[in-house]
Length: 110
Length: 280
Image (cartoon, rainbow over all chains, first blue to last red; front, side, top):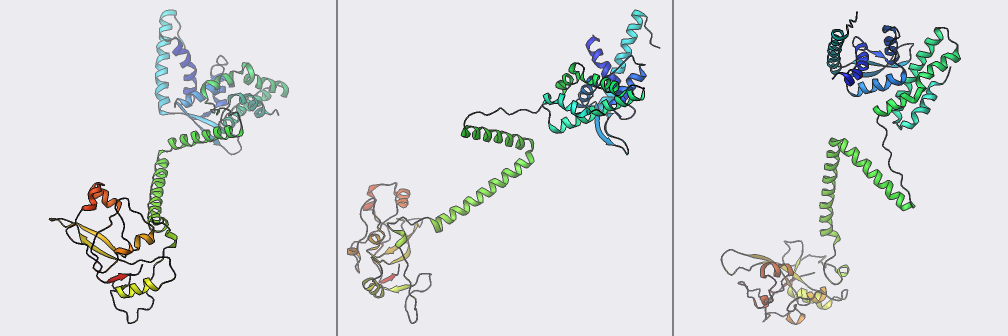
């Protein structure tokens, strides 16, 4: 029941969670995923941007070009109200998924 | 430093994106590769290795292109039009019409205002043209309308008659003098207006009529559909055979186009000329 939805939702949730607190640009998102997962999860440019554009098209994130002094013009993405709702749903789904795994296989994420 | 944008542009070409969208993606992806390249350099990698490594993520298996293909909407290519110049021109015209229709559908407010403006403009111009056509442009339905001229009395000093209308009236003897002595025209006739009650009783049925001198229809070159016109022979004082020539529309409207209208008698006699005539 969770299979395909969970796989698709996992990558979406990573991005939605990273832009939850403040807007971030694409490379920053990729680096944070790499750093916070200690290199276990990696997002290459080839898979990151199609996903960002898909989330933006669905209205879950909103992109905006920002030009800061002394920096290149960059596109920052922030979470929309609809994105917050979806993120909360996905978090709940993953909690249930891990809880189920834990009950069955004794996996207890610390 | 490698030209990331050129490499990205080359690979995005097959997606057929709009120019604006393509520039945005190139700028965003090149910024990502640039960031990755700088980080690799900072980690101690050589420029060549850093460049190769940064591009490898982008180039590998064309994943970016495959991913973008599922998300981005390509510009719809209009079908190529082959054939001769005329066929091609027709095809381009159809393309322009389709494009125009799409733009109008996308902007209903503008479309409504544009259509209303056109309707009002065309309607007003049509009404003005019809008025001008009827008043000034349409030729009179006579044999030679361009040869018709109106005769007016220039010196009215000491004249007698009815001068209350735009057309000065002269007495019948003066009309006879003009008719017999004029040399400028091949024919001449006089006319006057009068309203007659055509009803046999009850509600009054007024008809606007013209008295015309006997040669009028001959001068105008007008032939009757039924019966006969007046002739110069009818143009006598105390005419013994008073009658009338009615218009085609009046014949159709009031008498249904019946041939028996020739024997019809109206309540009020048209009588004969009362001795007055008008220059025409």
